[in-house]
Length: 618
Image 1: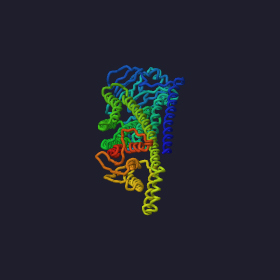
Image 2: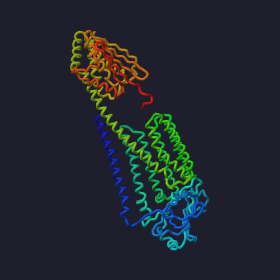
Image 3: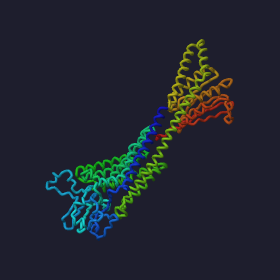
Image 4: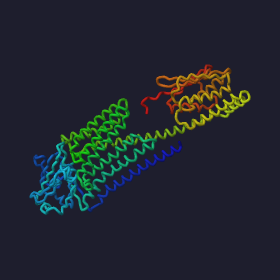
């Protein structure tokens, strides 16, 4: 017990220390990366929607002037921009065009200069297309660098107009232009400078989230004594939340490392689907009812199998993940509604479940706003990320406080085990007090001359009695009542040898189908013998009975001895620590209650009431 306590304390300390060190380290890196640009004069990085000064038209509508200080947040299927190269853009060495799920063409007004991300169809039969050409109608995620040195002088000097056409090819809810198309302005080190100084500060906090997900919550739950399923699920959720946000932050740069633009698309979509799956898993971990858990398992399995299915469609060049995203979005909404209904069922009479459900309201509201934004175009922002951040921050704080409470309870449990151990030692010592051993051995010594066979039986019973007391030190859990009753009979057999006809023993055992702490009834019987019947001149009877009610098991020890006045303060000079320890052990290990009633001259009754465990107790 002491060794286990030390190990838990050491491991617990290491977990929290490692968490703090990791947090401090990543925070320092974050601050350094944030501060370096203020001291650097070698380059300047910027991002804008388009590099042109002029006008634009959305889906064939009226021409509008471009405000280079603001992003173009119009939702579109086709947008056309005409104008001259921005002076700011012309002053940089690199123009990096970042596109998501759109085709674009940039050409000079006279047609002498043109760049495009449209892949040309090979002049060979379709079945012989190379793999990267199979999804020929999928733009994917692409970043393309243009060196301003390679631009014609007429374009660089602003003497000739450029025409930019961007097309969103999917027959679904349109996207905002700012979320699909942008231009990075970079110096000689290109996009890697932009990646380090713009995206890395955003990535680092979510690296910390991944760290917590992989290490802190699962290991902390294990340190508390077992693998905690809820902590494990939240750890997985944190990891995939961090991974999802990291991929979203780096989506503009994925094409730097992954040549196939459709694979870039797949990476971004799959991380979001896996993140949604872990949200469902975490919601299920808070469900206690078997029916709701079974339904949740079916929902999670169906969603995950669908994710595998749409991934297979892209890998077999049948349909890309953007094309299947409307169906997936509907499925996510349906699954989310069912999970919310299941949580509502769980909240009946459960305050913790109600608070847990309420904590997801920011995420639900943000998701609803994003859906509305698809149709009435409230803003170019993604409300989902803000709602998600609020919800996840609450979950992290809630689980850290819960972990702190669990850790305190574990320490309290260890302390209780220590007290129970000390109590058992005290009880054992009280049962083998020198005067009891002297009386028992004296009785056996006399029997050796008068009745050797009985003396032999008494010696065996006394030996078994002492062994039972010693075994109680190793027993940390309740034992079947039959074992306690067997030990009682050995004790009473020895006392019967001493008191002879002055001690009568009766048993009324109606049930034994329950458990009780070892040596928890004996102190009650010992009091009945020594301080009840033993104090009466003509002796008396000790009766041990058990019975079962609808809600509990009852063990009763009665005697018709001298009794005592319960209202009178005892000044007998004896220690009553043994009885108090007995009550504490029964309460802590079985949630049992000890009720003692007595009357002077009539005897004493001690009743132990052991509640039955609920069927759904785990």
